[in-house]
Amino acid sequence: MSEVPVWDEAKGELRILGKRYAAIDVESLCQHLEALVGVQVAEVIIDNHETRLGREDAARVRQEKPQATLSEIVSHIEKSDRLSGMGITTVTFPETSDKAITVEMSNPVVRATVGAAKSFMFSYWKGVLSVLLGKEFDTNNVIYDETKSLLKCQFTPRPTK
Amino acid sequence: MPIYSEADEMTEMTPVVDADRIFAINNKVRWVGLVTAKGEVVLNQMRPGVQSYSPSELDAEFLRLGPLTLLGVEERYSQYMQGVMEIVVYYGLTVSVYARLGSQVIAISIEDDRNALSEVRAWLKIGRSEFL
Image 1 (cartoon, each protein chain N blue to C red):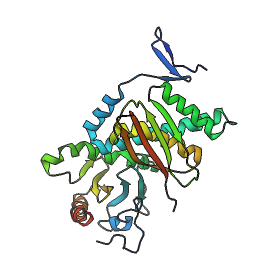
Image 2 (image 1 turned 45 degrees about the horizontal axis):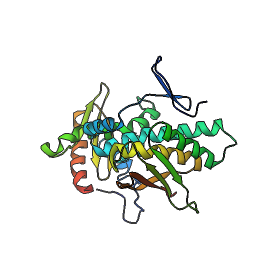
Image 3 (image 1 turned 30 degrees about the horizontal axis):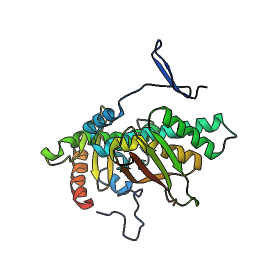
Image 4 (image 1 turned 90 degrees about the horizontal axis):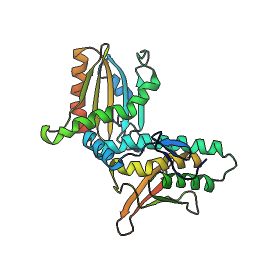
């Protein structure tokens, strides 16, 4: 499987790590959805979609690479982010499992810290982490550092009853 | 209006009102659902003894985003129209009502009965101020 995006102009086809994609204007899509249903509801709609995608992709990668470590699977999905133009994603795990996991995106495709764009950037990882670590996460402290062009989010384990 | 007492541990995932209270409004109320503002279903319950017309998995899937999306669309007019009280959908067999209730969104399905719908809407009117 190619490690770079494969663009076949004759077929009008773009593949990243074997999966077919279409390049779209994400910022425009997020703004359109927010204009339609409001910022909060748009955030929930994209969150629902991206969390499910993240869960499915993580489960698929784990099935395809049953011997891979957590770190190797995360690296593979970080690479998928990079190849699909999301930005440069770095996931940092804390020393103890009760602390927050940090996901940073350098040069992110969208930079909003609320709304549909926020969910677009981070909810996918919420789904990935929930499958890989077997627990649910909430996203917190989403910030954008303009000087570094760095979007950052913390994923805290959801307390279990 | 009996809601959860202060002794109960209220979390985002705790239903703001229990199903029995909604069923007590009128015996034509068939089903009640509650979802958080983040789209997490916290209640999805048929009245005991009543058979659902739709599959329960569809109810849960619809509840996750359906009422929130409908309210989101209509709330674009909120600033001009003094808010959205509730959304009423008339199906062939039943009537559905969607409304915000405190931090959550409630969905209620009723037999197609004018009196039952009026009582549900009257309860929601009181409920809205109670949960603010």
